Length: 315
Image (tube, rainbow, N blue to C red; front, side, top):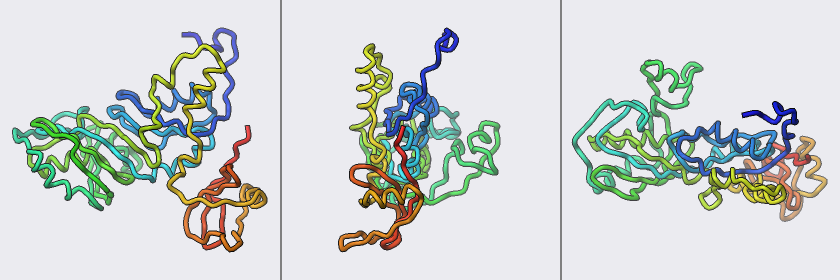
């Protein structure tokens, strides 16, 4: 297929687009490909995602555009929620359907047996990540080493699982829902739960239903994203309606409001002191607004506010 340049036409000009597109990623699509599609549809100069979602998984893939890319670390630090199916009787090399079987069992757990063990997998626990994971070992990804046939020895690390509950159960599989912190592997939950039950298990379906402040009611389907709309004005209005504002990714941070003069100082990289009887006194990261405008992410130390990330929306 010829590109516009091949036909003697200039390529569409890249533009400044700022905000979040919360893609309901379909099964089979990589996170990198999803970002490329969003970037092309919006002709955006800059885009990135907040947390890789495996091709075999569907659901919440937050894609940051423009100035929203500065907020990606804060979104990634937020709690995540997953709905996943564990099929019993087989453990695999990848802890999902992509791998080959390593252990099998004829045993199938009852719902009560599964439920009885869930408290062992909630709270702050030690978890060994899957061999096929993106964790780096001596500068190389664990999944690259595993694909080359190396035995990957990953150390257990501390993760936090706030909630783990059963959605449905039958003789073949159990569907579970988890709310967990950064770095938790759902595939590892399935593997370890299967081992504890003595029947083995692996993930056969996985959907991410939340990342930080982004929940299912604002997900955008791939079909809606790529819908053909002939009228340019209607198309622009449609695309604009799919984007959440940059500050939506910062909903879980406290916020402070500053004057226009203080906003200008923060944008120049200068710290300020919040004065007055009602001035907040707190510690840690905050979002900073001047009126309705997002100015910065700042570090508060008492009444002192120093800019950590500054936003520039011109263009």
